[in-house]
Structure formats: structure tokens, C-alpha cells
Length: 369
Image (tube, rainbow, N blue to C red):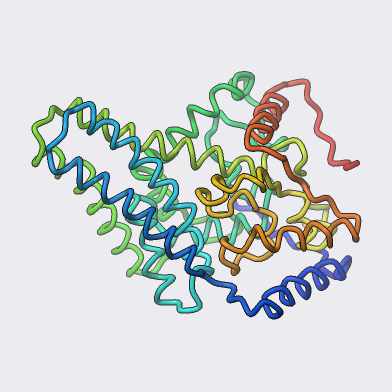
């Protein structure tokens, strides 16, 4: 992504919404005597996710099961890995899991354990994506692949005609790319998002190479050495794990921002978004399936992306409770509160959006009803 001038927001306007919603959410925690961080329910979920992941791996590496059962367990590992990313890593890397930074740092390494680098994620996601949501040329989450057009302002290519189909294959491969390419590429970039000539501490380079080596060892080397399997079986198991996690993560994250209801604003001639940052987050973000308790439990509140973008330091376990507060406040200030009632409605909207952005005759309008 080419370096562009830093975008700013007109935070001098429409400040009342942000002030009001913050006060009301603060009051919710104060009146109920609730910590903004993880509670017992979150801790139990964390333990279960880790048990599913390491338990599945342990059963595979024991060599006591048939090839078919070991293959199935790689699928379970993929589901668990996505859940860990959603429920543990994401909150920890935002500093939302605990008030203790050391606990957050420790749990944040679960991200590295899965093959993705937590340090670079804090830059591309916590800082860049959360600040410049859906702004072409800044938001790294819009740059999934050259043949996937997630912004109506990005360059159109003929391959985009079939992106509504190809995108889901690209999402599946996202974790493979992440494990072997993405982090190295981001570390080597001189310009990343709005950062020019970004340098990284030597400690983070060491963590990058050591963590990657450990991941390659436990996912590829140990199974080949300890199990009576062929390299083809190893590859099938590895890809099943990676493709499962990649597809789940890719779809869930895209439903939050690339759907029909969300906007893709562009800065004006002064490189400014002419509205308050909090309102920008409201119009570029989408919730889905808020009443689906099982999904809420699994995706760690990522179906409450509006609340997450407004309050990234609040643990995701609390999003279902503060969601009505945010929605009511948005209604009072006549600000959109984008959401889909079900998971499949959100997928359908994302599919239609991909199809629109892949149509060479589609003209994007930022006008909102």
C-alpha cells in the first residue's frame, strides 16, 4: 500500500454523541459494579478454547488414532484457533482482557502461537484499521488480495467480476498467507498505512523469527517426525487446519465493514473526513446476529463491532449488555446503527456488496438515507 498523507477527522463537530454514549456506558459499569475487563465467564471460555486447541493437537500427536480421525481433529483445531483469535488474542492485544498489562501481553502471545504476529497486528489493526476504518489507502483490512476489491475507491480489475465467488477462497487462504508471508512483508515495509519509514525494535524481530520457528516446528516438523504419516497426509492436515481457521476469520471480519449498509468515506481536499471520528466509526461499521448467544460466545463479541470500535478497551464479554445503550443513543442523535438480525443475512449482504464492487458499471454514492 502506497504511503499517503495522514487523514484527520473534524472532531470539532458533533461531539455530543460521543460524550453522551461514553457517559452512559461508564454509568452502566459504575451502577452495576462491573469491571470493564474479563469476568469469570470470559475466563471459562478462554480455558475451553485452549483445551479444544491443545487437546486436539495432543490427540493427533499421540498417534493413537486413524488417519481419518486425525484429519477430523485438524478441522477441530482450525475452529478452535479461530475462536482463540476472536476470544482471547483480540481482547488481549487491545489491552481489554485484563487491567494487568502483563496478563494482556501473555495472552496476546496466543496470536503468535497461531502463526500470526501480535506486534504487527497492533499496528495494522489496533491503530490503522481502528482509526481509518474503511478509508481506501489507509485501512489495511481492505487489502486482502489484489483480486478482491473491498473498497469502491480501489482500482478496478477485470478479475473483480468474479470476486463474489473468489473472495471466499481468498479468505480460506488468508491464514496460510499470514503464517508464511504477511508478517514478514509488513515488517519489511518502509511505509505501512500512514506510517512513513516505520522501524521496528530488535526485540520484535527476534520474537517474530522465534515464534514463527516454533509454529513451523509444532505444526510441520513434529507431526512428520513423531507420526507414521506421509508428507501428503501432513499437508492435507495442515491445510485443513489453516483453511478452516482462515475461512472463519475472513468471513467474520468482513461482515463488520464490507456490507451494503456501511460507508466508504473519502477525505476532502484537505485530507480530512468531515465528521467526528466516533460518527465515522458508526457509519463504517456493522453488527450482526446480536441475539445468537452461541455465535456471540464463539466470535468473542466480533459481531458487536460497533461497540468494539467505540470501546476497544472494554472486554468483548460485555458488548451484548452495552449494545442497547449505544443503539438507543445513536437513535436519539439520528446516527445510523447498522446491523443484521442474523449471521446469514450479513453474509448475503457481504456477497451482494462484493458483486456490486465487482461490477464495472457500478457507481458508488456515499449519500446515506
